[in-house]
Length: 480
Ligand code: GAP
Image (tube, rainbow, N blue to C red; front, side, top):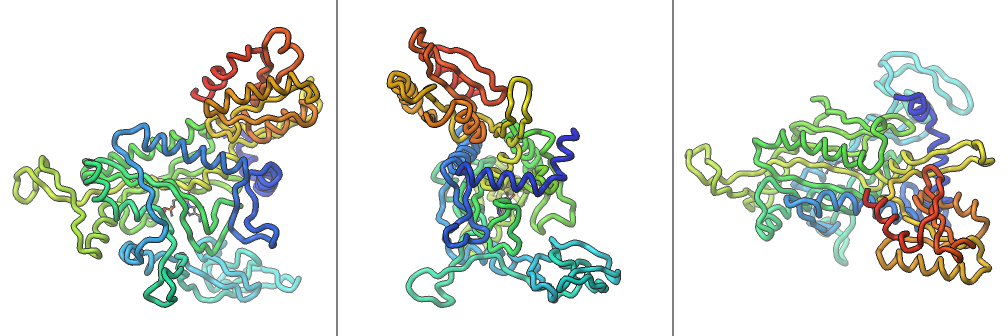
C-alpha cells in the first residue's frame, strides 16, 4: 500500500467533509427536507447524483442480466405480505442490540461501541469534568466514554406501516429491509414462466428500509437506501464452487469500473461471524476514510430461505430435474430445494465508494497557477459524458455550432452538457469537479477548419479533432 493510501485512511474527517461539501456544492447529494432543518439519515440525489447512481445501477444490471443467459430480472413490490417477513425470520430476529448511556443519554449499538476490559478503570467526560469509573460491561459509550449503561435490549429494524384504512395489528405491514425475499417467494414463478434450470439467478434492484440505530458516515449507513441483489439458485453440490465464482466476479466488477484495486479486499467471514444459515460468506471491503468496511456481501445461504418459505406457505418450492439421480431411488428424476448464492450490494453505498475513490486534489504545477479538484470517475459512471462549450458566448456562430454538436450527442444517447458561462478555465474546473471526462470547445479556428478542441479530464491534454469525429471518439472512450 502506498503512503498516499495509508494517509487516506488517517484523514477521515477532512476527506468525508470534502466529499459531503462537494456533493452539496455540485448537486450530487442533499440532506432530505433541508429547508425544514433536514431529516436525519435521509438523502436526496440531485442532478449529478441521480445520474451517477443510475449509471452504477445500469452497469450492474448490464453485467448481471443483459450480458448473461443464466440470470433474469425482477421488480417486486416494496410492501409484501407480512407472512414473508415472519417466515424469513425478520419479524422475530432482525434486530440490533441497543444500549442507552445513562450519562449523556446517547442510544447506540452495543456491537459498534468501543471495547474495554470488564473491571478496568475508565475515564470519561460529564458536565465538563473528567470522571473515573469502572467498566461493568465489555464496552463504553461511543459518545462520552461512560461505563454507566443500561442493559442491552433488542431493537427490531423493520419499519412498520398499515395497509388499508384500519390501523390495527392485522393491518400491520413492513417496508422491505432487503430486496432478496421477493426473489425467494417468486422462485417458482420465474423458474417456470421463463423455463430456467438451476443454476440460474434472479436479480433485483431497489429501495430497502431499515430503522438503523446508528446512521453513520453520510450515505454509508442510512435508513432508506438502495440495494442491488442477485439470488443464484444452484444444485446444492455446486454451491461452493459458485460462491467462489461470484466472489471473484463481483470483486472484478468494481475494479473494471475504475475502483483502485489496492482500496478493495475480499474477506472471508470467520465461523463465529457467519449467519446461522450460511455456509460461507465473503465481504468485499473498501478502504473508507475510517478504515476497511463493508461494500458488498456474497453469501452461500444454502436452502434456508426456500425451506422456510416452503414450510410457512405450505407450497412446494422444490425444482424437479428429470435427469438428476434421486439418491433414494437411484433412478433419474429428483425434486430438490436449490441452494442460493447471493451477491448483495448497496447501490447508494457504491455511490459513496466511487465518489471517495475518484476524488483527487491536484496541487498547482508548472504552467498551472491553480490547483484543481477532479473526480476521476470511470467514463461509464460519469454523470455528464461530455461538456460542449463555445469559447465566447457573444458569437452566434460559435454558440450555434456548439448547440449542433450537443444535438448530435443527445440523439445518440450520450449525456452532454452545454456551458457558456464564465471564462473557459472556470468552466473546465466545474466539469473536473463533476467528473466529466471530456470537454469540447468551439473557437475561432473552428470557423476556419471545422476542428474543435477536445480536452481530457484526467491529464488535461488538449487536441484538435474534426467536428464530425467528435461522437465516435467520445463513444469509443465510453466503451473502453
Ligand atoms: N439480502 C442480504 C442483505 O441484505 P446486507 O449485508 O444486510 O445483506 C447488503 O446488505 C448490502 O446492502 C450491504 O453490503 C450494503 O452495501 C447495503 N446496505 C445494508 N444496509 C445498509 C444501510 N443501512 N445503508 C446503506 N446501505 C446498506
